[in-house]
Image (cartoon, rainbow, N blue to C red; front, side, top):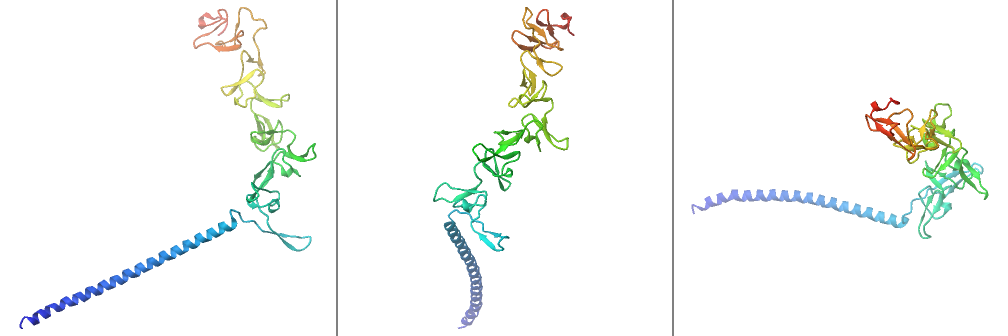
Length: 318
């Protein structure tokens, strides 16, 4: 009987500690449950929003079936004094069913009767700076329908079409009219090959590039010997060719004081088929083979031996 109170008193702290632990665990559980409930609620809300967006996108795509919205424009009529609404005026690139849906001068291009069309520029027109600009031979009603340096000209068949103005020729590669000699211009691209836009005067005009001269017979600027040239678009003077980026007299021809390529070979070739290149001791011209050659360094052409020789053996050229 003496041990029972001692055992009872020792068990009291144990029970208190057990209740305290349970309370702490209950508080932790409730706090964890609130966080989980909040997280689950956010996830459900996010899922509902995403489902709503998907349903909206599906409804819009099914309704329009790839069609873009048509612009509705209000037009004020000053003559009648009333306001009318024009429906179905679509701009460039927007969908259409027929030409009346498109804003002038656009037309409706369709690949099939069941497929919506698209407003585009008429045939032979290009969309430039928010407007349709007519190319060569495009049907037109006024000069402003055509690209720069073109006029709306009457044709033999009774139609009016875009044509290059006087002093201009159509460049198929660049798809534009380019000016001939003395034609008005704004930049070099407005002028033909080997022409530049001369802006030194009040009115700019196309003129020949440096070391080029205008030849009216061919209506071209042609490069003199020594003029910079491009092999693909070279226009050198007669008996000259573009070689290593410069115009050079071809074959046996040599330039004279007027930058004209002349033939120095005699009409009848005698025993001396080679002659000295004018003004150059190292070079010689082979009249028989119609070519020009340069002697190796430290040697010059010997007219008597018809060979390259040391300078000490050549007395008529220094």
